[in-house]
Image (cartoon, rainbow, N blue to C red; front, side):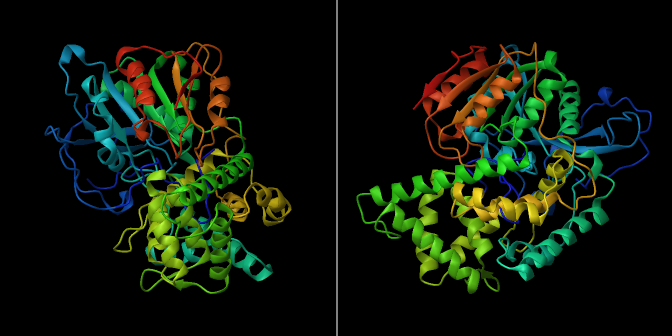
Length: 514
């Protein structure tokens, strides 16, 4: 199950959150080719294209480490491995260590599903410099994402309307508009990307990972998965248990839950994060500018969202801040404690009629750049999620479930419940109720759970350990805030992760970091 189904929005990947070649298509020219024997042609990375979010080419690292990009051919259909191929975009930076100290490549997936690893790895790489002493750091755009034959649905203007609409209908007319909009989005995906849609399941991406391992020359897959990347890693371990090398799962998806259970868990998780945000604000030495008590902070936010449902305020010209956009912006900020101050500022501004900061946060969640262009994260998120998950929920079912979602989160319950309709009219049948990650015989996998994680609640780490099987998952707990643990810079967490990835030292199961 994906990491989050926020209202009309794609999942962001890790807690730091990004605030700021030609697309490879399907063809017949490689029929009969053994893709495991291909040699990658590494070159200087081009600037990210629109599907990846735009911007400049990645800058060298402080030690002048140069980023290199290459395109790996993979079968479009893994059921026909010598048929049509697609191109998967890879990025790497070479190890700083001596060749005799090099372990191999460490492949990252930063989550989503739908996040571009080609843009994420350079953005976060300085935080992984210690790991670079023994690994080439590698990431990729999974199939359907970024430069890897991206799923394309609606255009920028249509997406503006899509993300602004009322995602929590209060009457029959609003419900009809929401359902019609969802159908139109899904139809556009089928019309524009129908050929790739049946081939973007997590099992397909896991087979791509194993091909990547072979092409990079590694006998085992050394892997760092974050958020949805933990689900991808778990599926890989299930399919190829004997090929698992040193692997870390951080911000762990619960592999035992179906789509509804995951959404309900996230409602509880984001409510907990909101509670913690409110308590933090009023505990500061100076007066909290958005409430006199934690309950007052939450009550004022609820009133703001109710007011915006009736009358939007000025956002980023020419758009207005709607209830849906404001909710997305708040969810975005709750991913990381580093963003709480920005959320406080945005709420204070919104109470004075200025919604620009909350809209900026919402745009970040939805993959919209300042020039009005969207990356393809929303389209890829929907395509991968709907191809993976079997359940299909209609409006009547959501309405019956609303009371439990509202009990889990008075502020976010409606949004997360209505988010479940996203796959209802999808062109491709979902694969399963939930992923199979059982991996008997696999090497130890370090599974890191954060007690304050809103998007992948802490309980998912224990569920992943149990599902991987006896002797595989090793649980480590971080008592912190935000989505993920390693990038919190907690010395205990980083010491345990680095010790395993660099030296093969498995920490004692049940280790707790504070």
